[in-house]
Image 1 (cartoon, helix red, strand yellow):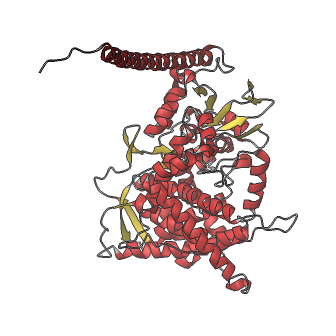
Image 2: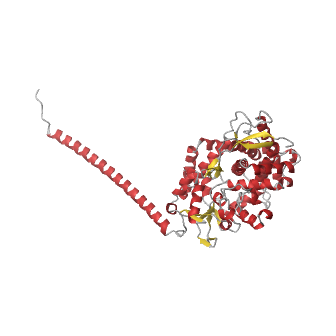
Length: 560
């Protein structure tokens, strides 16, 4: 068959198709080149902006004359990096040793290590408010409580309401709950001692203390104990760990260098995304709080018509019944009750739990001081029933000094609680700082200030007790007290400090009245702070996270 040559029309069609294909390819290449060029331009623009911002921070920022490490003055990344590592307090101490009492740790943040600077920042008349750091800690816009409210008037109003729940009546009511839990805790420990004359197996006291403290706070805040201190399986046993995970995750988020951008994103979908990607432990804790408060609200409503003496007088009761003294109206909505209850659990657990761990870590490595505090307790009280909240317990001077020294060496929070200076600026140690500057004082570095304490790493409770025959004068006491703020101070101090101290003293006195305790032979658990096995190691996660020490208990030998 004769092969036909392509016609002119066929040639034109083929040519047109080829031309269209080439043009499409060309457009695609041009679009790709345009996109690549645009991306490169965007990266160049962003890099230039970051570079120029760094130059501004270093040389033209209002804080340019404040000393600090080069990269920290240029960017907030180094501060955030050490917060992620959990050793930001160590990083701060290093720079205080280099630069003196004030350090610019972020472009817009100055941290101080000085008693007068502390008073200037946190004092009653300080022209500051809580920084945006606290807003970043919030789960969402509804999750606002006394701690996270940064508006000065709003915080004062919430604090006034919460203060109604921490009067002498509520503390005395709460102390009975504390006694019941402590006695059960001691009974569990005693049951683990196989022979009355022998020591128990070694145990991580931080784990045991966390379980006790959580049961106490849950009972006070939610109306029931979850019995995680009890032996055996319990679905709630992970909750102290869940709280730590939740707080540390939130802390890392709140320290990000671009916090203003993060706060802008939060109501625009970031809050929901964080809920999804947050660790399972954090999600467990949030669900736990919601369910527990829901149950406690239902119980409160059931008891509304009962006689007052038959109602449950825990801390939730005082929250739910708090009324505005001017109007007589209830001050907390259900959302408020959820937020404040969560705050009470976290705030009530970290200070007391850390104080217990620090106390046992240092007292069990100092036989002389251990004997002294045990003797004070066992000679002050004639029986276990006498160890209750009241003036006799408050008279245990050496016990209180040991607790203060433990809280100095192991503060509940390691890094600064940031404050933002308001319009008009602020004088700090006769230096002026403009509005918008973020300032603070870090508890761990303040409590390790050689100018205040001298032998900063020594566990020496005697520094808190006036005894001029031993060289401890009124001036010495005033000096160490000026640098010591375990519950903060000023208008944002911890409202629950009296309850916390009652819980600490009751627990330690009742425990050491009935049990002997010692460090497990050969154990170094909990040590390693600043690489020193004799110094307790903490991880900075907003609260101080710790392990150990590993201790053993033995029944007290009465008459000994």
